[in-house]
Length: 541
Image 1 (spheres, rainbow, N blue to C red):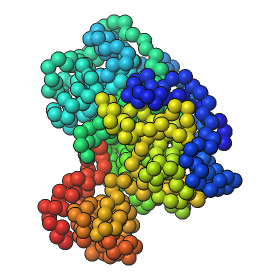
Image 2 (tube, helix red, strand yellow; image 1 turned 90 degrees about the vertical axis):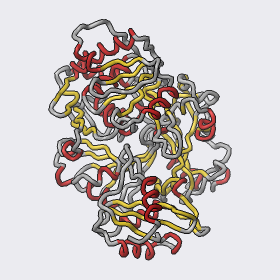
Image 3 (spheres, one colour; image 1 turned 90 degrees about the horizontal axis):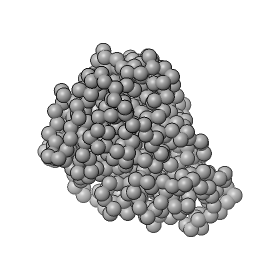
Image 4 (cartoon, helix red, strand yellow; image 1 turned 180 degrees about the vertical axis):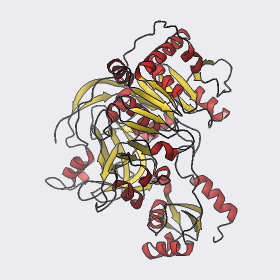
């Protein structure tokens, strides 16, 4: 196993912003716990290392805004972003962001602070992101049309935010003691006050994303410049974006995959196509498309001639959807929660592949399949995925208990590194690819048997005509499934599950509906489906 050069991460203060320190050589040799596996050569100990360690790649020690500034200096006339007929060049983006950075500094924003960005999708959103990063601060993004006042107050309090960037056309109700700065007004100002120039080291926070809070209060995850650079500046995470490449921006800015769209485009000199109300109209013009599988399922690939690269993540991808897009483009299936910086595994899928998997760890990252005691499982056995390496974020804000539950010292990399409990179930194939088998919280007990809800939905998505499916638990004896579109035959869909899975996995009811409801982040809204199922009383469709 080659030596792997990783930045050291202190384990005693996960929540500290300066959680990365000096670089060191971490030798993944025998560690406590590996003795449970058959030894090398060609045993599970050897494969645990070969499969679980992504390739080692050098990453430029550029902060994210410095990468964007380089393109502004080299090609100031190139188009950085478009939205509903309005364009901004890289030179204009740099000038507007510098003016806004100067305003932030006048209002007391200093390197290491956090600044909220509560805006609609558009050009000012991009200016605001760059301005905050140029100030050395981390941006905390929220969609002004979707965020509710109680949630926003929780976010501002948890992230210790004092300054909020807003727009004149999207007023925000802020608590007393917070300063609102209008991006539109800053862009209209033609003076050029000196703005601070800040180099953000890899360990400084780049953004704070709040999880959706579907299982409780939203949790703020602090992601560093080094975390983001490791994905964007290495293959395949760079998605082949180069100067002039058009990238669709279709996702909610409060969702971490939007950072892949926005920062992935601008750090490589591409042109960001920011959507209006029509997602497909933007997708039809783009060369690179990043989406959840549910959003992608509502876009016709035949109408998207320029698209050459597609990446999905956020939820399991149906094989038929992957095949359909892979016939026309380079298609990547990825996986990774916010806490592991957007995605930490990727696979290029081709229609002729034996299976659709989430691939292997991306560069400088690791994945371990562990049991409930955090011991390695033999190759092929189902366990929980733990993530290590440069993807592991700096931790949750103001929640040491949750940090202790979800982050742990990495015994396989050692050297003070951390690993993260993803709560995703998976297993290694014999040739070293990861099969994603759903979330641990999607693994339920029905009639005393363990059922993986995503496995039921996967069978349904194999039914002819079914685009997407979701399965929810109503009680200890009842499963209900929903399929899209409404033309799918519910009885035939239920029969397909009965033919493929044990009797206790068969849903009591299958509802065929026009379109599955989505969360604000473009994923299937299973909580709403459960409420709908209870309202229907589980009655047959």
